[in-house]
Image 1 (cartoon, rainbow, N blue to C red):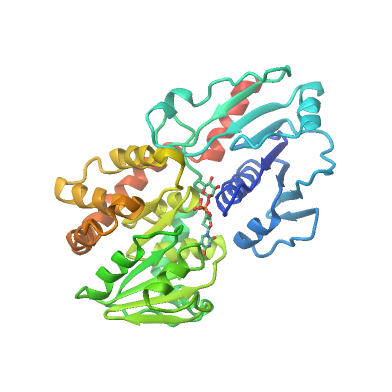
Image 2: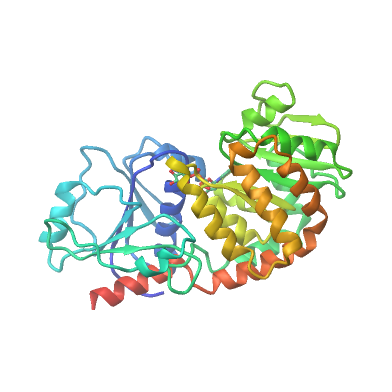
Length: 387
Ligand code: TRH
């Protein structure tokens, strides 16, 4: 990547951490890969602080990793709009700022960064113009995605190297666990990470793990699912650093980790349960079997996203693994399936196939990464529109 355009990335945190996570990764990559002057306008510094504890939540402006982080408040002074403006997830740019984009010479380029979906319509909508109803400014849709006809996924160029280094050095793993208040799990235990939303299926899955022949250590960084895990053990929401046990299962309650530490947790696990958008992508780069808790939407619209992803992901997997993998993901996401036995049955069919599933996850990551890093693709796209 090269270029000297200035960038403003606007992020409104709707809920949780995904909006902040995606925008932060993008802003960081624009600076690191493109040496571009980049401001991240974000309305909720607390969400960003959870991911990057170095930031100060009471500062209206601060710099981290070369990104100027600006608190987007009602009375924020935006100054001159940047050459390229990213409106993340259609976050509704302030009127006066949008007018200044159109009044500027040359005009700013406006890009609406959309949510990630594997649905087939994404490729035909990626890059389409999105004319503004009243302002004379060029605006385009930019869709992340899983193929070369999409904007790709966020992926740092040194990710594979950092992952390999982490996996080669047990001391790094030990440090991660120690920081979280634990020693390294026993070698023979299956390691699972669990991040999700509230989920009535939790008890069924934990039951299967507790009753299994092999010991399981499940790492539960603090999230909306933590309380449900504790309830399974008959406990109230436990403190960070506490472990609860039943049968062969040990649940370890971790603090919410910084983004880099969370990546390490995913890399070192045998299975990862993730959610939303950004952890879903990180689990794919971890090259381990995983289960996605898709962000629930009205009228079950999220099931189309789930199925579309599985259609792509399961290509090349033998039927003997595709069937149980689909049942596992469905069982985890669909409250109507709770009590059907699907989850426990699917887990029993899959848990002995870790190496095959890892191999598949590795090929999937290679294929998916070939679509290029989202930030690099976005830079190219904008340069071609600005010519
Ligand atoms: O938090 P999420 O559910 O985020 C979202 C939001 O709900 C958002 O509104 C929606 O639009 C989007 O999903 C699709 O899940 P996500 O996207 O996985 O973001 C979580 C981030 O938190 C991700 O960057 C990983 C990070 N994380 C840590 O840094 N430390 C941790 O300990 C954990 C568990 C996660």
